[in-house]
Image (cartoon, rainbow, N blue to C red; front, side, top):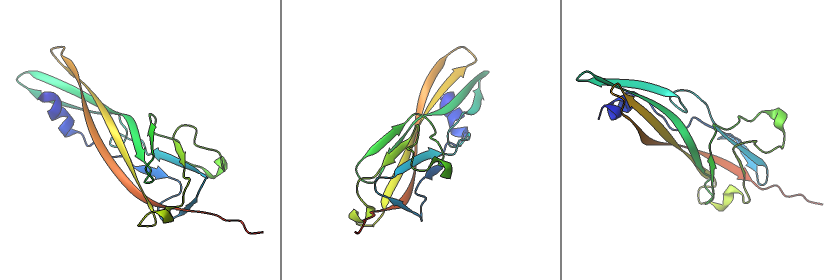
Length: 155
């Protein structure tokens, strides 16, 4: 109970989504899509809080264990890192740790965009002053919509 109270004191959010193409921009079928989250106590961890009662204190520390990216086209990507933010110097290189490539344009969806969700699984280790330990899990989700176009070459 104290462990959950400590977790309730933390502000654990879904990923602060970074993605190429950016929402409002336009990606291209077959080009690398970089996936990442900004790191911090609320979006990736570590995040620590304590709760006390009756002379006992429980300290809990939360860290994101994985992020599952549902790409909006029926596919998903599981990343065990925060991902690498895209930089123009990377050009057409795929992400070294968390990326994707679309095979179809987003015009194949009813909205004309891919609805991308990122679901963080937070692993929370707790320890009580009496020596007891345990683990809890929390889930948080964020989402963005992106457009992916198809480029056709004419001779």
